[in-house]
Length: 138
Image 1 (spheres, rainbow, N blue to C red):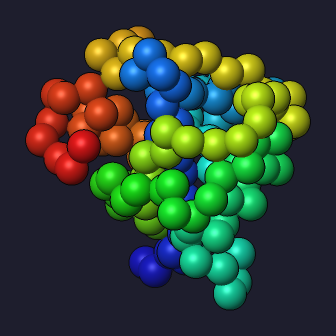
Image 2 (image 1 turned 30 degrees about the vertical axis):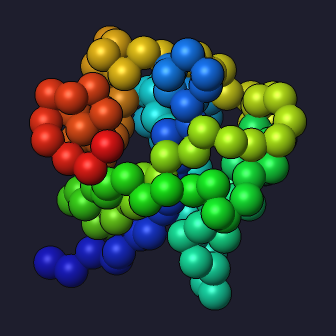
């Protein structure tokens, strides 16, 4: 069975303490209550970097320059109705204060504590890489 490929992009935003921002999916959305990296779908004609700059502004009110996005790793995951491909970028520099615009909660989390937060299946391998439980580009 062929499922559509969905391309989304995400950011591991690091604060000055080395913590990573996780956002909780709000009620009414699929996978509500789970914790994930900020980001979203890549629209037709966008590069992943352009999409992430747009999504971070839309979701969190911050401005990020493409040059501050460092490719980190990616997830490729089969869900029942689609296949998700998600590049993850590291970002340590942005302008503005993190202010969620879509009703989501957020937390700054030490990399070693990422697995304390229930997450969508596609995010777990990314948590593994960032927490050091699985080798990867970090």
